[in-house]
Length: 551
Image: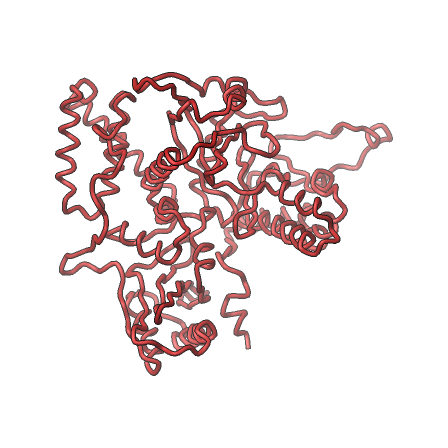
C-alpha cells in the first residue's frame, strides 16, 4: 500500500498544481514571454535548494501539461538541468551528512562495527548483536584475505538505511589503499520482533542485485538525493543514474534522466530504430535501437481472438507490476506519453509495422515547427533490453549439447526459469503466458519476466485438474472439450507447450516438476490467503549467516 500511494502521490500533486494554475492565473492563455520569465524566476528559487533536480522535473511535469508541444525546449522547460547538484550537502546544524566515515584500526574494528550499527538508533533491539558482528567480521576477513590495513583504511556508511519489504539495508564501502569494496548488511526481524543481520554482501555484483531494476523501490529518508546517487554510483559505476533514482523511489527523476540520456545518445549515434529481434508479440509491438540497451513497447490496436483484453486492461497490468513487489523477477518499466523521435532514425519497415498494428498511436508531423519530421508515439513503455530466453536457449542448442558451456548455459537458464516462476508465485503473481519468449536473461544471467498482459494474482486463479474424458471421442479430440471459465488454470497442460526439447524436459523435470501439478499452485494460493508472506531475498540463500555459519 505504501509503495502504491508513493507512486500515485507525484501525479496527484502535478494535477493539483495544474488545476490551481489554470484556475488562478489562466496559465494556458499566458504569452510565452511570461513563461520564459517564469522559468528564470523558478531557477532563482533553486539556488540553495537541496533537491533542485527534483524541482526541475516537477516544473517540467506541470508545464508540459499546460504548454503546447512546440514549446517543449530549453527556453521554457528544463530539457537540460539548470542547477548543478555537485557537492550538495546538508549544512543544517542538526542535519545528518550524506554519509559517515569511520577510521578503525585492526584492534578496534569489531567495536567500530558495533558503533556503526548502534548509530542508526533503531527502536527494536538486536537479538544478539555480538554474534551478528562476529558473522560480519568473519565475512569481512574472508573478503580482505588478511591484507595490510593502509593509512587511509576507513568505512564509509550512508546515514540512512534502505527499507524494502521486511528488510532494512545498511549500505557503504570499505576503503583500503587504492581498493574500494562496496558492501551492504541486510537487517531483518526474527519471530520475536528482535533484529539480526542476515548476511554480508560485498562487491559491485552483489550491490547490482540488491538495486536491480527488477526489484521494488526502496524507502529512504534522505535530504540530498543527488548525493546518495553519487555515493551509490561510486559503488556501482555501471549503473545508470536514472536507474538509481528509480531504485530510491524517485521514478519521475529517473524518467527525466533516462530521456536526457536517450536524446544525448541519439546525437552521438547513427543506427536506426528497428523491429526488435525475436518472436513478435500478439499484444505489444516492440522496437529497439541496437546501440541503446533498452526496448520500446507500445500496445497494439488489434489483438487476435484468443487475447480477450483491452488497452485499458493491459495498462492496468503494467501499473500492477509497477506497484507490486517485483522480487527481482519482473522488469521495471518507464511509461511515457507523446514521445517524439526523429523520423530519419526509423527503419521504414518499423514505420509500416506501427501503421499496420497501432495506427492510433502514431503521428508523423513537424509538431514543434523546426522543419524536421518527427514520429510521435502517443503512449509507450520502455524496459531494459534482455536476451529473450527462447533465443538464449537456441544459442545453446546451436552450439550443441556436447559442448560443456552450452550444456551449462541451457541447464542454468532452465533451472532459473523455474526459480523465477516460483519467486513470482511467492509474491502472489501468476505470469499467465509462461512461454520461454516472455522471459529474458539479464547481463548477470538472471531470468526475468517481462510480458505482463496476462498476469493475475495467484489468489484470483482457480487451479484445476483436467477432467477425465467421458468417452473415446473426447479422449481423441484435438480441441478442449471441457468447460474453461475465466481465471481457470490447468498446470498439467503447461508441459506440451514448454517441454518439447528432451534436454530441457530432463532438466526441468529434475528441478521443477512440481510446477506441472495442481498441488503446488493450490498450496501457495492457500498460504497467501492465510496471510503468510514468503521471503524472497536479493541474495542467494547460501549467503545467509543462518546457513553459512550453521555450525
